[in-house]
Every structure is written in structure tokens, then in C-alpha cells.
Length: 627
Image (cartoon, rainbow, N blue to C red):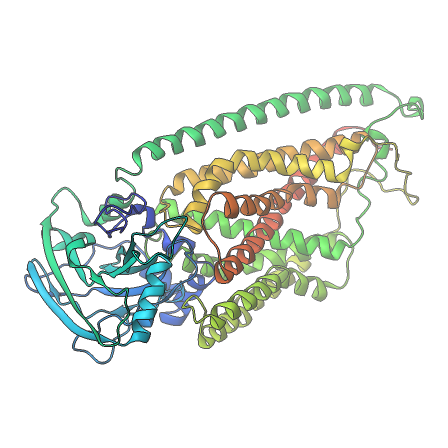
């Protein structure tokens, strides 16, 4: 068989196990794009979804009690986003003519779960049992053949523990001459379920196939009969507790080496960030100390035209920027996304919800986005009011729409592509309506309310220096490395290099079949990203002011958010060099949603750079004497 190994390794052609692999583990719920973020509102409501994802003692079973095997989906192994309903292939439905659907937090994560006809009872071994004998038409065999040729895998669940396996295999395929007559296509009609238990709880699952029971469907004769069967083996696992049952997905033999490398890599990055931060701090403090000493010793009437530096532009440095409405809206939206990211990671590492539960992370994300919506309106309206803006309503609308509108555009495209191809990754019309209602009735009003509060609580901008009536002329002889594009490149490259290692693991989880559970490391990487972004943006703003260029408002936002461009560029590298993804559906999902993720990073880190630069500029000009 060519099923993936049950120990967590990537799929191998020569092995027979097809089940619980950490490489394909329940990190699926972590990666499934926009749909899982609103699953709770379709099922049990926003706040109820988070509480439903909270840790619990787990279900307990009596002897011979029924255990449901949930069938979820099928799809090409290389394209995680291209998924179809399990019974889109003509699998055996058993004695039931109708399939009972099974709903949980993953209902909108591309999942279309149904209760399978496999009859399993707690701690009852089944050596062999016939599921059904099914006669296939040529059309049905062609569907299976195409699925096998495209490396389709299926996904099942027992007690939220995932299992994976291939639909079938191809034998005798030659790389140079793939269409020779000796190529045979086989379907796997027999599944062996191995279920681990600890006293009265299920703690592990695995599904494998027997290569001796495969059925040749190469000739695709009309009326071909296939007998589907299964077996069940219960294995005591007293060493594995229910609360630790997900650990086997990342504590397998596939991971120890990479796990150690993962920690060493993040520690290495953390040390480099500390050294960089300390280096920049020492340099900036020495430079500023010299500047302060020089400026404060010079009398006002002795400060001639030959004198240069940031002190000379004290009458222009706080001159309000052009397009202040848009700037305030971008900063507000970025502050909102920063709060969502911070609280999401904090909840994940503190156990407020179970990150490995299907759809829990994206559900928590949408709940946090809705609840923290006042942040965008508040920060934007407050800053816009300090800039002297009067059109507060326009500013509030821009702030609450500047991120959702591009997201809706991308979603409309990828959802249309998925619908056109009949993929289960497409969101149903009712779910789309509920998402829209959620935003219109919750997030949008809270954003406007935050804008009202920000507008009424904001006072005049308290600049430490008076702004002159006539703008000072800006020198135009700056070298190329001080141009805006060069500064943005430097500002984006350093923070990106700090998270590059972690970004690889995240991509492998979001756009692959690997699991990600090390949220402590992810939180540390997030802190490093914020710190490096703030420091490098402040440094570049200082160098800009030192050459008497006072247009730092927009520059701080663009330099801070430049890391988003590097993340999007890396997504192209990953797609073409580190993955085997292809096809219209997968390409649309990948590049569409990566554009939104990069845009979100631009807004979030842009706000970090802006506020760090604002605090820095206010501080240095409040220390020296002003004209």
C-alpha cells in the first residue's frame, strides 16, 4: 500500500499503514482559511463556540457502547485546500440509504462530516466484517480511477482524532512511459481500525489497509463487484491520558529530530534578536546622548545654518501628514489586528480553548475580531481628531472597512472557484449570509461605537515643538540607500529574517498536512517580530530626521509594514520550491489568502512601527530646547 504511516511520517508508497499521522494531523483546523473562523455562528453561536472548545474531561464509554466513525472528505494529497465530500466518490454506504450528517466546530473548515456505516462498539474486537457488496458502473469506476491517479486521500474521525488513508494505488507506473499496459490501478476495499483506549476513554486511533485485499479496477468493466469490509482492534494505552491524546501526533518518530531543530532555530533567532536590539539600543543611546549634549550646549542665536541634524526641523517635524484620514484608518485597522493576534496567541498558550480541536482556532479568531472591533474605530478616530480632521464618520467607515473589503473580494473569488469545481471548500450561501450578518450586526456597530468614544476622548495633539507656518525645504541630495524603497527593504528584511524559520513550520501546517501545536514558540516569535519591527522602524526614522526630512508619518507606517511584502514574496518561493501544490482551486486559495495574510501583517506591523516612531519622536524633541 502507499498509505501514510501511522507513526507521523509523510506518506510512503511501500508501507501499509494509512492512519493517524502527525504530518497530516489535526493541525488541519489550524490551516483552513476563512471558513472555520465563523463555524460557531452557524452551529452554536459565537461565544458558545469558544466555550465549546474549552478543555473538558472527555467522553467516557461503557462496554459495548457504540462508537461513531465519522467520514469527512476526500481530495488530492498535494492540494490540501482542494477537498470534496467523502461520498462524492461512490464509497459503500452500508445498509443505510441516507447518510446522517455530523456537525461540530469544523463545519465551515471545508469539512462535510457524515456518520459512516462502520459499526464499532467499545472494546469489541472485530476480526473481519462485511460492510457491503457493491456493483459499480463504468462511470463510478472511472471516478475511482481518476481519484487514485491524483493521489486522493480520505479523512475520518473517531472522537475528534483524525485518521488518513489513500483511496487506492497505482502499480507498474513508469516515470518516462506512464501509459503502458502493465500499469494497474487498485482500490482499497478493506480498512483496519486500531483504537487505543485508557480505561473507559478513547485516546488514539489509526486506520490501515491490507495490500492482500486490494481490488484491481484497471479494466473498468461495467458491473464490477467489490466487497467492502473492515476489522477493528482495541489496544490498551494506559500510558496515554485523554488530555494528552493529541501528543502522539507530534511526539512520533517523525518529529523528535525536527522538534529539537525547531527549538534550536527559534533560540538562535531569539539570541540574534536580543543582540540586534541591544546593539541598536546602545548605538541610538550614544548618538542621542551626543545630540542632546550638542544641542543643549549651543545657544539659540549660535545655531547657524551650517548646523545640521534633526534639531533644525523642530518646526516641521510635527506638521500633520497629507491624507491623514487614510493614515489614521490604516493605523486603527492595524491596531485592531494586533489585538486580535495577541489575544489569540495568549488564549492558545493559556488553555482558554483547545487549539487542536477542529476549527477552534479560527472560531476564536472571528470571535476576538468581532469583540475587539472598537479598537479600530477608537484608534483611528482619536488619531484623526488629533490631526484636526472633522469628517469623523468617513474616517470611522474607512477604518472598519479597510481590512474586510479586500478580504471579501478575495473570498468571493476563491469561493466562486470552489463552487465551480464542486469542492466542499466552498462556503454555502447560508453560511455567507450568516457571516455578513455577523459583521453588520456585531463588528461594524462596535467599530463605529469605538470611533465615537475615540473622537470624544481625544484632545488636541500635544506636540513638544511649535509648528511653523511655512514648511522647511527638504534636502534632495540623499544617497540611494536613504530612499523610501531602500529603507522599506531594510525595514522589512530584518523582521522577516527573525521569523523566517518559524514561518516555514507555519506554512507547512497551514498549507500542508503537518501539525502545529507549539504555540509557546509562536508567541515568542510574535514578540520578536514586534520588537524588531519597532526598533528598526525607529532607527530608520531617526536617520531620516537626521538628514532633515520631516516626512516621517507615512514612512513609519510603510517601513513597519514592509515585512508583509516579504511574507507574500516568500509564499511564492514556498509554493514553487517547497510544496507540490498545483491546480486552479489550490492556487486560488493559496495566493488569494496569502495576499490577505500579507496585507494583515502590513497593517498590524505598520501600526507597531507608527506608534513606536511617534513615541520616539515626541521623546527626543521634548528633551532638547525648541525654538
